[in-house]
Image (cartoon, rainbow, N blue to C red; front, side, top):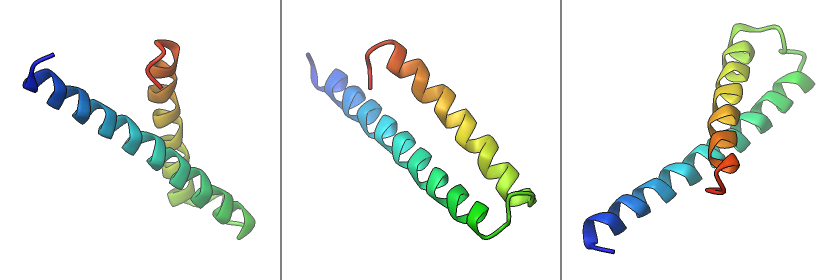
Length: 67
């Protein structure tokens, strides 16, 4: 594997880890908002949509054995 391929692989691994961390942070934030009775707010709905998008993306990689 050449240097460029290694750099691309490292960038991919970092991006995938960032996606997974973002998913976990949003899930925790949504849980906290639910506990505060803020589940019907626009912010909650936006975060829920973002969580779903991240889950879909992560599932794509998981299905291919990349996570």
